[in-house]
Length: 154
Image 1: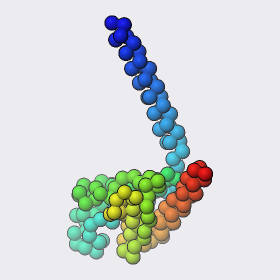
Image 2 (image 1 turned 60 degrees about the vertical axis):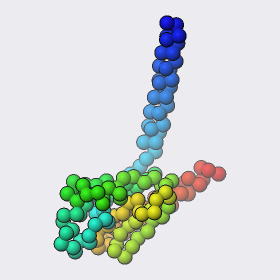
Image 3 (image 1 turned 45 degrees about the vertical axis):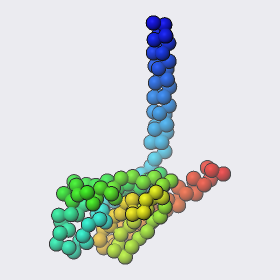
Image 4 (image 1 turned 135 degrees about the vertical axis):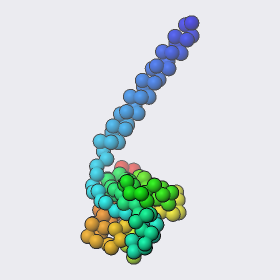
């Protein structure tokens, strides 16, 4: 019975230690994350906006740029449920970002270090001012993160 009490006490101590450490880490991370800009864009997957099938497959969502990562969250449009859009949604940390590319379409492609197809791809279909601003915001945020990351590693 004494062995069970020691094990239970040890398990409780370890659980408390780990849970408080994890909450401190996530709290520290959450406190350091700052949203820079949020845009409403389409996922670049699927047919172009001039295609008759566009309304059926279009996926409009929220593109968020922070000081630590970039995210595309699908909205509620019917096309967002399509499997083609599931590959280009989510969050990509700047530490995993390999390349930011703008195409003539116009489309913003964001590549991960670990995968060849773009991890995220968004467009407004016309290259309007908001799209250009998003490209600049992302490039600036990533450059600042890169400089800050290199400064902390020295």
